[in-house]
Amino acid sequence: MEAATAKVTRRQLLGAAAATSLAGTSGCVQRFRSIVNRQSAETVSLSVTAPPADSDRLATLIARHLVSNLEAAGIEATLNILPQSELLREVLLNQNFDLFVARLPPVVDPQEYTALLHSSFAGEQGWQNPYGVTDMLLDDHLDAQQRTDGESRRTNARKLTRHLTRTQPFTTVGFPDEIRAVRTDQFTGWEEGIATPISYLALERASEIPPEEELSLELSITDSRLSQNLNPLSVEYRQPEPFTDLLYDPLVRRFGEEFVPWMASEWAFERDGDQSTITASLRPGLVWHDGTSITAQDVAFTFRFLSDTSLDELEQRVPAPLYRSWTSIVSEARAVDDETIRLTVETPSEAVAKQVLLTPIFPAHIWREYSSVADISGFERSKDITEALVFANENAIGSGPVEVGNVVVDEEVVFQPFEEHFLTRGEGNLAEIPERFAGGFPFDELRFRVTPSNETAVELVAQGDLDGTAMDVDPREAIIERIAGASEVSMVVERSPSAYHIGYNTSTRPFSNPYFCRLVARLVDKQHVVDTIFRGYGAAVSNPFDGTRWSPNDLGFDSADPVVPFLGADGEVDTEQARAEFRKRGFEFDEDGTLLLR
Image (tube, rainbow, N blue to C red; front, side, top):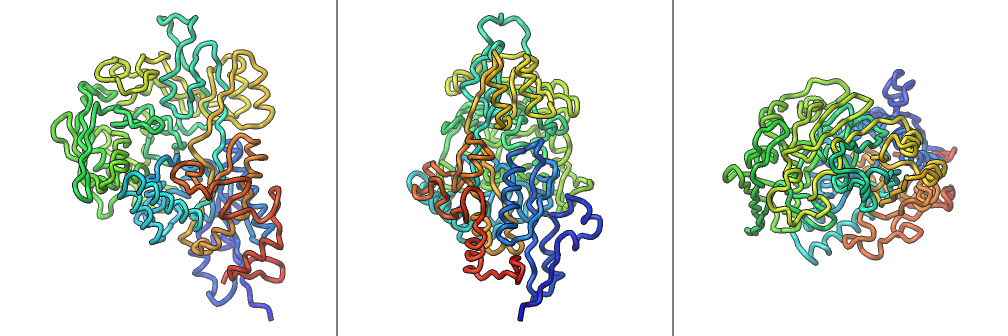
C-alpha cells in the first residue's frame, strides 16, 4: 500500500496573491513544515532564486540548469527571478529562500569563512551565515584556523576546506573570467588589471594627451544600483567588488598577498597569550571629504559602530551586515591619542589579526546620527535594522581617493579626485604603496554611465563614447566579436575573485540534512557550466580555495568534482542514477517518481 502523500507547494501556503506572483514562490519552509502532518510524506517542492538575465545572465542560466536537473531527478522546482536588490534583500536580510544562485563575496583568506559560516553568526543579517549553518565541527575548524599561524594554520584551513566540500552548506560552481572592453586612445595600463575599482587610479594618460588637458574617465555600468545608493553597508545594493571602495579608505589595503599601509603609515603587532594587540599610527593631515580632520577616535568609533550600529541604544545588538570576519574579533578599539589607535584582537595569530586593518573607516560625526531603528517596508525583520543599514547616503562623506561629484539616479554617478587625499598630495611615506598608485590620478573626473545592456555598453566603447566597461560583460559570441572587431578597443580578461555558488537554506528541511545538500550539488555539471554558460571563460572548482595553498591537493577539480561528481553527463542528469543515489540516503519517491520528504 502506497504511503499517503500531501502535495503542498509554497505558493499554496502563501496564499492567492503569492500564487500569481513570481516573487512569491520563495516562501518559508518552516510554515510548510508546520502545516503538513509530520507522519505523512510530502512531495518536495523547491524554489531556486536567481537574478534576471539582463543583470546577471550567467547566474540565470546556472539556475535554469539546476531547475532542469532537479526536475529530472524527481524534485519539483520553480525558478524565482528577482531583481538583484530584491534577491539580496530576501536572502541576506529576510532569510526567505530555499536555494539561491549568486556570486560569493571574494574569499581571499580562510578567516573570511568565519562570518560566512560560523554558527555564532546564524542569527545575523547580510553575508553573516546566510545559509543558517549550525555545525559544531565546522565551528571547531573555523576557530582552529583563527588561532594559528604558518604551517599549522595551513593545515587547519585545509581541514576546514575538506569539511566544507563534504557537507556542502553551499556549492561553489566556478570562477568566471571577467571580460571588459577598453579603449587605449586616452588611457593605458589596462593590462595591469582592473578587477577592483581602486585599479582605476593606476591607469595612465596616453602619451599624446598633455598633462594639463582636462580628462574624464568614462565607464559603463549595467547595474543602476550604484546610482540609487552609495551606502557601503547596504548589502542589497553592493556588488562583490563595490565601487564605494573608492570612497572609504581602510587603514591597510591588500594587494595580492601584500598588506600595504594606507590610512595608517605603520603598525606594530604584539602577541599576548590568546590575544594580540595592534598599534597603528595614522598618516598626518588626513581629512574627510567635508574637510573635518580624521582622528584615531574615528577608527575607534568605526569598530564599535560596525559591531553594533545601534550604539547600544537597543536591547539587541544590530551589527553591520559586512566586515564581521574582522570586526567580531576586535574586543577593544582605543584611541591612544589623535593619531594612534590600539586594537585588542581575540587571536594570537598575526596572519588573522592584521586583517582587521582592512576594515573601511567611517566618520563618526556622520554615522552616529544613523543609529536609530529604521521604519521601512519590505523587511520582515525591520526591528533589527537601523538607519545606518538602509539610508541611501547620496552625499557620501568618506576619506577615499575620490569624492562624490554628481549623481543622477538611473543615469550616472560622477566621482572627482579628492584633492586632500594623501595620494593626491604625494606627501608622507608612500614607499610601500605600489609605484603605479603613487604618481597622481590620470583623470579629472571618473564618470560611471548606466547603460541598459552589455551590447549597448560595448557598442558605446567601440564608437568612442566611453573609455571602457566598468562591469564585466557577458561572454556571448556576438559581444566578443564586436570587441575584437573595433579599432582602438582591447579586451581585458581577468579571473574574477568572486565565484558563482548555490546557497542552501540549511536551517530548514530538506537542506538541514547534509546528505540532501550533497545530492543537490551532484545535480550541477560544473564543467558543463564553464564550457557552455561561461563559454570557456572561467574555471570549475570544488571550493573557493581550489588551487590555492588553503585547499588539499586531492580536492582539485579535474574535469569532475572529486567529492560531489555530477550524476550524469554533458549537463544532462542520469535519472535512474540520481534516484538511486537519493534512495541510498533514505529518500523515497512516489509512484510518479517525485521525491518525498517525511
